[in-house]
Structure formats: structure tokens, C-alpha cells
Image 1 (spheres, helix red, strand yellow):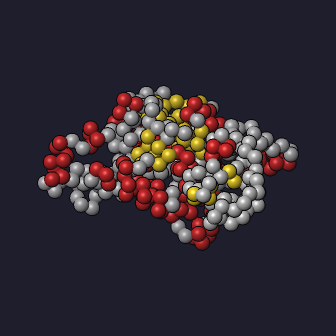
Image 2: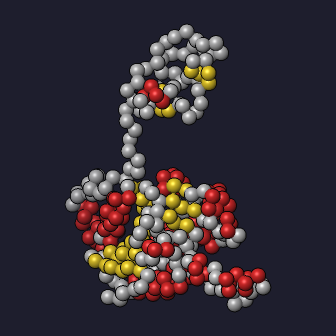
Image 3: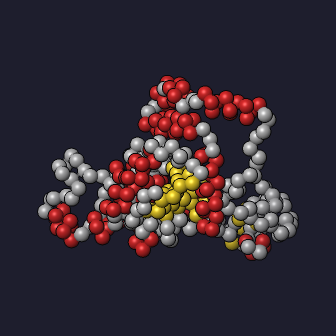
Length: 340
């Protein structure tokens, strides 16, 4: 098996792990890593033993983008000041690093799951934008620092438009390094599909990869091509060619095995994989229900369980108001009543 300088590569039982391995520089992408990722993605295209790929990283961070030690040298800065832009043979051509580090840019149509911990920013989105989905540790943060440091944010946020709402991509791009999106916020807006404790990240990603690797590869890849194509065309156009993906992506042997599995009555059992819940349920509130009392001046009389807007004659702020887990209609007016 080929060994690499900046990437760890291992494969077993249908799953390949591609692990960025420059932890001393937070897995920043240098030219060597570009070349090695390009070689790995292309090699995996023809490796029939691999049916699912996990993209991971060593150390405390996933990836902090292009290595500035190489890309932003004094020589390059001086050249830009003279109007000579490195990487641009002409104003209409650019040696985009994304052509090397992104799996889809390298025409790899096998599923790639990303396992993200710590910082993921800038050029990391070249890779994350081309994965099928992302599972993040609870310490993961996401941001794009280009504008903060005087550079136009273009390639990376365009990649993210397939995974995030427009206004969230715009906010990330314009606020730059001044705001870091938490893993939980990334899950809320769809960038991340699941958040797990850091210690459980590998286990959870491995479970998902195992499920995918055990499915018929032609059907998996046909599904991927159909959905990625649908992102690029209108809904009507996508549906009009869906029959091509179902026809090309159907293997007679796998189809027959699938029908036999269905007829057997056996179904995947709920709970066989790790729980997908990203946050624990809140503790049940032990505070007694509010009692009826005389109205405070300026406050209307309320019944037990009604939502109050005042406390001891002063307004209750939205930070003091918290939902009581014991009832969907009952509110704890002040947090200390719940002991929280």
C-alpha cells in the first residue's frame, strides 16, 4: 500500500480512511498535501474494494485552509503589489487548489463522509463542500477568514451554497474570522448532519460508513449522481432524467437480493446504531406550578401555568424565561426556581 507524507491512508472491509496529517500546522493544505489528495481521490475511483470513504484529520483541528507559509510569501505579496497574481497564468485562468483536494473535482463518485473536530475554515470547505454529509464533534467550529485578511471569499462560500442557506453563507463570508459558527449551529442550518461528543466521533462515523459500504455500490453511486445532478439543474430537469439514474444504477443481482431481504420480513432494528440525538434532554423541572395571586400593577391577572411578563413589579427578560420540561404550556418565570 502506498504511503504518503501529509495524509494517512488505510482501508479495510470496504471502507477507506483518508486522514489529513499535518497536525503541527492544524492540517493546513500545502502543495504536497494537494498532490497527495489528488492522487488518492483518483486511485479510489478504480479501487473496487472501497465502497465508502471517511475524510478525517489528526490533531485538534480538522483543517485551517491553504498553508499561508507557502501561499502568502513575501515574494508573492510583492508580486501582487506589482499586479502579478501568483496562480494566474492570465486574468482568465487560475490554478485552483480545489481541483486537487475536492473528491468530486477529481471525478470520484463514491460516498465520502467527513468527520470534523476543532477548527474547519477557509480552504477546508473545498473538501467539505464535496462530501455527502458531515458528522462533527461538539468542539467543531466553522468560519471563513478571507475577508478579514483582505481577500475576496469566492470559491469556498460557493461550495457551501449546496449545504447552507444563502444568508448563512453570506454571514460567514462577510464576518470572516470575527465569528465562528458552533457545531450545534452548523447542525441547525444543515451544514452538519449530526453532532456528537468528541470521544464518540470515530465510532459514529464508522457506523454510518459501515451501513453505506454494505449497500449495493451501484445503487449508492447512482443515488449520489442523481442528487448531485439535481443541485445543478431545475427540479423539472432533474426529474426528467431520474429514470436514467434508476436504470443505470440498478444491478439485477443486488435488486433480487434486496427483494428477498424485504420478503423475509427482517427490518433494521431501531437503536442498532449510536443515537443521533445531538443534545441531551433537559432535566425535568421540579419547580411547583405558579399559584394564583393578586395582579401586580400593570400586569393582568393570570391563571396557573400562564406565561408571565413581570416579576416583583419589574419586566422579565427573555434571558430569564425558560421553558419548563414538565409541560409544553407551563413556563418557569425565573431560572432559579428550577435550580438551573
